[in-house]
Image (cartoon, rainbow, N blue to C red; front, side):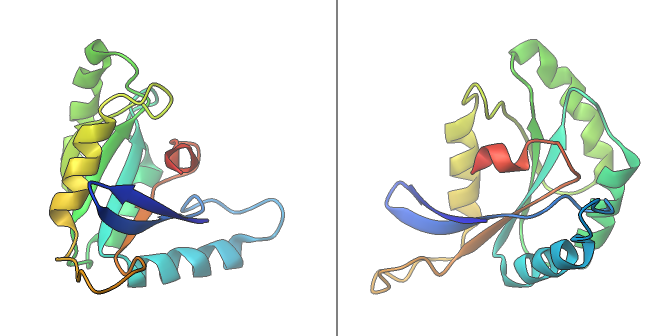
Length: 151
């Protein structure tokens, strides 16, 4: 699913990918993989979303491995950090070695502005003459880390 986002007079498309590394019970695995590849190939910035409450999982490492060859900016988004005292648990994800870490809670809108600023800072320069979004941002991560909640 793709959504148009506006932040400080910048427009970008936010693409929510399916969960990586899961065999879909409805036999949509091949379609999900194709959608993920299309999103990865067209994105200018990546949000690598992880779940603070469950901690690092092997599938998180699989997602990072898929992004290893990507030369575009990655923001490591530690989601489900509803309270500041939970932020310490996000440090575990630093070992993944990808992206600037930001802790958020999408349900609480916690650190939303900080995340938007990180995104804006990493987007390519805008062309003021273009009326529609040409920069793309892709959300990747394992299933149930809160990717869809961003949208």
